[in-house]
Length: 554
Image 1: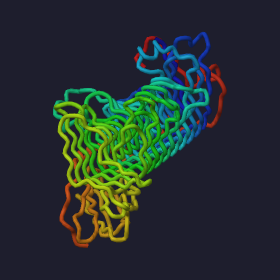
Image 2: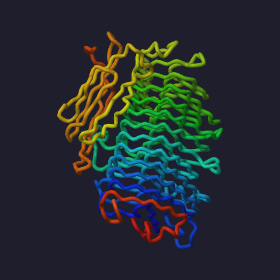
Image 3: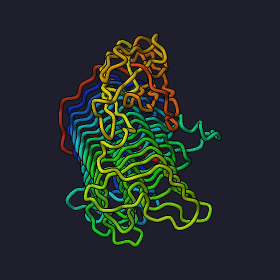
């Protein structure tokens, strides 16, 4: 197998850091040339491949577009870098990405587990952290069985922290009835492999998505097997990706009527671990398993979905749940969640559409509320054939303002900070942030991170010194039970190479608390590089930033 590496600044960086590089290169190529027949393409706006384990890709920006039309089954494309094991911080992509496989061989695509990895920042990352990265470029794809994300296509044994996607993700005009794509506003897929970790709680520190924001719409036409969502599409492999403190404002749509075994959700399409303090404000439409927060899940707490949730599949197993469509592997707990909007599908539930199906299955719904916009009478869950179902304190409300807020989004929070950073945090409670909500902020270690005006809705913060710490935010109406969330903080000195590995605190169900009183070239490392020229084809790139590898591992 051959690999063609293409980068706007460097094709490969084999042993070095990539600092403050800017690419204005427009990468356009068609993979039809005889010299590249049978090759897999790896393309990055700044670099195709950064190899250094625990290295640094810092403050890099791609402004050029990436366009590829190919007959080949495998393409990896990232706005900043395609593939890396290095940590990425403060990187940005504003260039559009358009990738099309014109004639995929379905047998080959299935055998090789997909025909593409595409990400606004990176196509694929492993054993690292991506933090404070922003994508503003549009991603337009015509692919089958691929992983596509506004920030990263696939991340393995890694963390995504404080990342934001504003770019739309959509099918190209010719992508009719595409199959099997996993698409997320932040990540296409989270993959977790056992590296000798046996304790389930330890897995929560391996794959983490914390404090991420998606505002880009996702619009596709998937006939079967696809999953789309606002944050991450699907978690694959061993359990262990914790999703906390994330918000989706993008609309999630699968426009192919009759889609079979397609899942769509505001936060995650298919997942089995804790989803905590997440908020979805985007419409969710299409597929046969559709959820305001999750398509399939096992544990959801303190989440809010204010949106319409509509399933449009012709399958008899079409379900739409205000919070979750169905239990994942038979067990589901939903606590302190709120839904407001319309529901549509064969089986609908205000909180859960489909619960326990077998004798040893279980469904728990506790302390949840909902408001159905069209006034229709919808039960807390749709169907639960067998197993054990427990419902406690779950009810319909005439107005969302009648229920206490269960979630909070903190504007300005990213978890990762540099020494000296000053930030403003603003707390917004969901489903309603009325004037009666009181907030109390507490830093765990003022020598690392301080918060001023701690009794206000909006506070000032400053990173003082390197290290890991956290702050706690309590909120609730005066005189009523308050809810507390812990937000991890990691402070590094990126400019001087003092990078602290984040150790996010696993976020279990929040517990109520008593009311409180008020670089340069291939193979090297460097910074300040800049590429400002364009090119229109593959041959123009050879000798500049293209490497053709035979029988390589990359």
